[in-house]
Amino acid sequence: MSESFASVLPRPGRILPREQGAAPLDVVIAIMAFLAALSLGASLIASRAAEGWRAGLADHITVQIVPPATGDPGPVLARETGAAMAILESTPGIAHSAPLSQAQTEKLVEPWLGKGALVDELPLPRLIDAEIVPGARVDMSALSARLKAAAPDSLLDDHAHWISRLRALSDTLIWSAYAVLALIAVATAATVAFATRAGLEAHHDIVTLLHQMGAQSGFIARAFERHYFLSVMGASLAGAGLAAILFAVARGLEFANVEAVPFLPPLALKPVELLWLLCVPVTSGLIALATARISVLAALRNIY
Amino acid sequence: MVRFENVGMRYGPGPEVLRDVTFRLDAGSFTFLTGPSGAGKTTLLKLMYLAEPPSRGLITLFGEELASLRRKAFPALRRRIGVVFQDFRLLAHLSAFDNVALPLRLAGGRADDYDRDVEELLTWVGLGDRMHAKPATLSGGEQQRVAIARAVVARPDLLLADEPTGNVDADIGERLIRLFGELNRLGTTVLIATHDRSLIERSKAREMRLVDGRLIELRTGRT
Image (cartoon, rainbow over all chains, first blue to last red; front, side):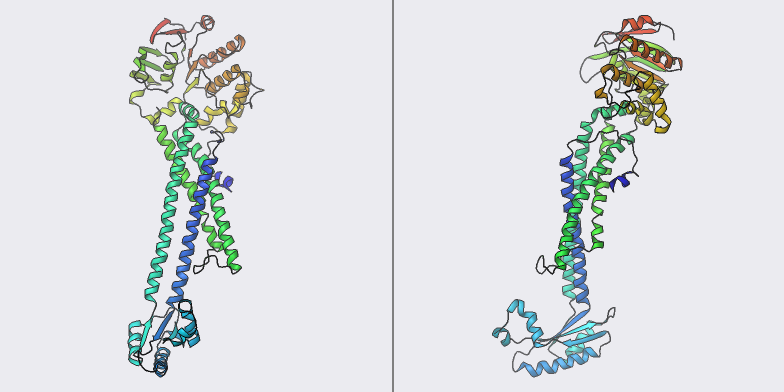
């Protein structure tokens, strides 16, 4: 792959000898590309998961009928649930509404309260789940007022608070991933700059000779650009490839219904999303190209 | 072609290696530069092929005064100069052929255009059968011939040679001097730094001698 891409690069021929002992640079770049690909994958997963959560909550509202503090809650809950249902069914934009059964409500609180006698004795509210027609706009404050009028113990929850918190969480995750990517890009540039300078030192005689024979600085720079572009592309392809394999394994676990981390979305990327990981070697290569060029031109400016 | 006026040169805070050097090389001239080891011959050549700036004085090359020239213009001037380095300075990872072809590549030539020229030149210097050998596998004399072929292949306007016959036998030496003479007849200005008195005696060319960093005109010669 790199050979075909390399063929479009300006080719000053093999002016530099094949690098001996370049393995440390390749290993460092491969590790950084692996971490960059993991960060990029994590940002994609966070973005997708947050969008899924947001879409799931945004299309639903929940009406809660709070049991009265005194007296038998049964008749009150039944009367207010019926009144709330009537309001919801008559509201334009509400596609469907249905009260949750006692069993469904108990299942919701089971992770926190467990089940058994304690739950049976607790005055659980009645919950009504209503689905909004996709794209429809429902005036929540007007609906809340009408519900309050018909069922004084009702509370309307349009999940706005949760959605905003989820958005903040996903934004934090995504921007954290971008920050990690930026740090890795800077580290890659610094590593390549260091390696280029070491390369210039190692090939000082060749560079000086070419310079004295009248080679333009750009010609010498291209020899280094090409060298480090291909080297960094290869190493970062290996690193990003390893990360892609990990994400593919996670997808396999998802298919096998194995939950990698409880409560978190599956740590897997879809095949289309895996293609995004190609950005890592391409960007790394371009960073190497630019860094090598800048370093070489700066060094050549110091030669008469 | 080349003019030095009161040129002095010192490396860092050290003593002056060249002192008040003044001379002129006319276009198409052939000159020998002689002098004992350490007299400053190599330094003088370095100033001429723009490897070092002078500490003082004025150098004019191809009609351009270097001190007033922008650095961007230097590569074009350097490509008009062929240099035979005393230590050859061949690229170890390139074959003899690729080393000789290097100046043509730097000038932007295409391999198809110069392949024949390089082959012919290498054959002429007696390395027709060693074209694809790496410098490490060549003898000192063979390496020197590759270095000379590299210096002349682009038909430079100015040819500078630092002890070009130091490692070759008399026959090859004679052949190389004939090559320089041929180039000179084609218009190349030639300056050869050498210790080889027999080479100088056989020629009627101009001789300049460096002693303790000062230049003495020994023989005006003919061009």
